[in-house]
Amino acid sequence: MNEKLLLEDGTELEQVFCRPDTLTDVPYHYCPGCGHSVVHNVLMEVVDELDIQDKTIGVAPVGCSVFAYHYMNIDMQEAAHGRASAVATGIKRVLPDKLVFSYQGDGDLAAIGTAETIHTVNRGENILIVFINNGIYGMTGGQMAPTTLPGMVTSTSPYGRDVHMSGYPLKITDLVAQLPGAYFVTRQSVHNPNAVRKLKKAVTKAFEYQMQNKGTCFIEVVSNCPSGWKMTPVETIKYLEEVMFPYYPLGDLKVPKE
Amino acid sequence: MIKGTVKIDAKICKGCELCIIACPQNALGLSSNFNEKGYRYVQLIYDACTGCTNCALVCPEAAITVYRQAKPAKKSQVKSE
Ligand SMILES: Cc1ncc(C[n+]2csc(CCOP(=O)(O)OP(=O)(O)O)c2C)c(N)n1
Ligand code: SF4
Ligand code: SF4
Ligand code: SF4
Ligand SMILES: [Mg+2]
Image (cartoon, rainbow over the protein chains, first blue to last red):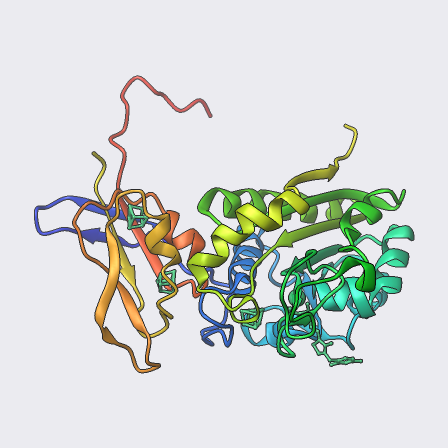
């Protein structure tokens, strides 16, 4: 990181940002502009800064991020669809000195894994749950998820989500924030540089709370899916700001009383 | 103005343009060439970079390394440690 660069006019520049050390050299398989990649980058940057590479264990989900373990150079375990927080529970209980997180999409965490999610938080498991909410089943071809917005067009809601037939989008983060086991619950994003900075702070806090055995930390990242949404990456940023954030407002839902 | 620059790994850039819209100096643009994967990659097209790191923070591929001019040490600020 302390690499220097000498410009032709003699100005000396210092390196102030580089690819996180704890990322492998494997290029991401994600679509161009996909938020999954940015969240991976942030997680590994925090692991670098806290110097916890040898202590951190991640649990990968089923969904587009199923191969998260190809990129994060830490110990990782793959879980069956929706069960990542249960698997993380087991790992943390057997290895309480490790820092354990699950990484899950909305189809994974808020559909098939709803029970695991709620009960993990209700038990106050001392883990971090990272929840990537892109409002869609990205991996399987852009089907409607419980989190899909009313009127949103997906491959299984070609006329837009009809709430009379499919119910309203599930704000599972608001739900888990009500549970006593939840210690820190926040909703973040990665749609611009400041949002990325904020997410990084939240992840840092969550790992610090875990070191203090405080209970479950839950970080939702309202993210994009350019392919599933059938938009360019730049168009997804506008959609996030204009459509997703009004329904899923960013900010802390539960902060520790200190 | 503080001087900075970026190095972009053209091999792994996917041309998503998120760095372009994040740059307050409008210093980045797509090349007219393609990389091995078939993407038009991003280049510094305008020598106005301040090394703010915005582009690198939002780059999904972690393809951007940022350099910035060292802040001149202020003589009045003595480290208290
Ligand atoms: C038990 C089981 N049921 C269904 C599937 C099919 N499946 C794979 S990924 C997925 C949904 C992924 O959506 P999400 O969790 O939102 O992840 P994303 O790809 O959007 O990041 C489904 C239903 C599966 N692999 N296993
Ligand atoms: S399908 Fe969507 S979530 Fe999956 S990698 Fe592509 S953009 Fe990302
Ligand atoms: S570091 Fe800042 S000014 Fe330089 S190219 Fe990136 S966003 Fe633009
Ligand atoms: S953000 Fe990264 S991947 Fe996207 S165009 Fe810029 S350098 Fe390429
Ligand atoms: Mg999803």
